[in-house]
Length: 186
Image (cartoon, rainbow, N blue to C red; front, side, top):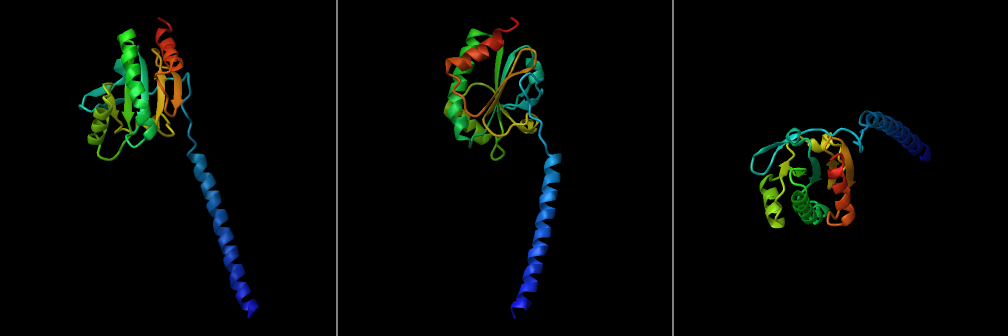
């Protein structure tokens, strides 16, 4: 009796092992084809054109010669919500101190109830800088790994600095970093 049960049991184990080995090989092959090459500081930025909450198209090529602050975010992201007020303060401070040299762009990646939810979010936090709706998967072109992520692009179109995660833009070290990028090659 034991022998009759042992043969089917061993058969199931062998078939399962073969299946799992073939799945592991396939997963390894799939991962090779999906290797992401992340953007790096010093690389040329990727220009894009997106609509803001009012339907106006903003093309980053029209902003060349300015330092761009490109932040990828979502309304459901708690760290994004925490970061936004300091972004607003930074935008006001730098635009006052360096008129026509700095542009903040917040690229929203929400996919549900856009732009209504995004507009309510912006009103609630009293955000005045342009909020763009990522209808063209710009986040994928920038190889973002999550939100928030910020790219500081210098006047020559190079990625000068990258930040992953929420940043307190009110801290002097962060303000100083961006001011150095703005005043470089002045």
